[in-house]
Image 1 (tube, helix red, strand yellow):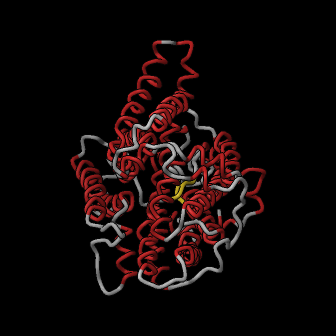
Image 2 (image 1 turned 60 degrees about the horizontal axis):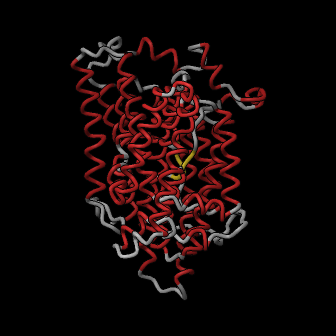
Image 3 (image 1 turned 60 degrees about the vertical axis):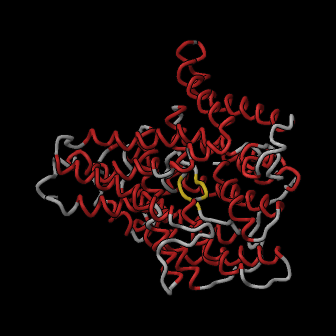
Length: 483
């Protein structure tokens, strides 16, 4: 999660005109809001052991806002940064009502009732596979750190625990932290020894442990507060673009929640759970706009992969981890210290975690007829287009965030470019359309609906209440239309 936060802030803040101090404050705000949204989701939302993380889906609409102010005249670059952040705040606040509406109106729950295991397979697969650009391509920016991290993690976490049975439990849970510590120390030694003094700027940014300047610029103590950048600015063109990102995070979160449920041993999330989760994600997005986050959040794919890697699927562990998130977001120097971990180290971890999530999607095939050519067609086309279409949109997007759809309406361009740059969104659209129109009535058993239907209703399976019931009898005080 920390790697995504640093990557987003390092990409956006310099383009806004912010300095290293502004980047540190943006990172603190993103971490602070991730902690709040994680607590909200684990207590009152999905109730699954998932961490909420800043989403890359907001990069395109935020880039559009940055481009809009890049040619305007300001007294200073810092003023341009603040005006940009205030515009992002306004866009997040208004677009948050999209998620609140489709969640608490049960519209999204009604939509997910059209899902079958055939739809879930490509959606969950591309939740992991669609992030391949953050794997080895990012690792290769500093291969002398990323590749040892990848190899060491596989050997330590998978092979060494079998060679040393007594250390099985320890290595299974803490091998990742051990490997990060070793490779991070190696990176610090290379940095201090001058190995990166005479290399290109890209290599310095990827390999050095001191090139982010976060430790020197981060404040010792700082608490994020509402409207910290000033009063929000509302502009219709930017709001519509941000609405597209809100819809995308709905699809991303849905696919991630199915993967989290599978890895944590829970039943597939029923429709009412998905609705309440998306509605609460909208409330979280509203808070992010109020507190001045640079982007909105979605369920963290890397932390779901961590469930499969460590075999720890405890909701309580995730809730306790938010205490560390609050600590690092308030005491900036400590958070900046861990944020100095080179990104290729995180990329090596992503290679493993995203692969696990992609594999989880394949496991849903056991509930359908694997010999049905109709099922093969739906899964294959949804999976391929879910990767191919976003790849086209991403590769044809310019460095300043202008996508392939270019009309006179910038808001319309941002909306379409954002939606079709998301692998889970494309997979849901294609998969749901095909699965519900190609011999749907005559393929009920082949689609696995006999097994699936029980988990789509609150009382369909006795285990649903065990996994997804609200704490402290809160359900008795909440109107049934919101449950």
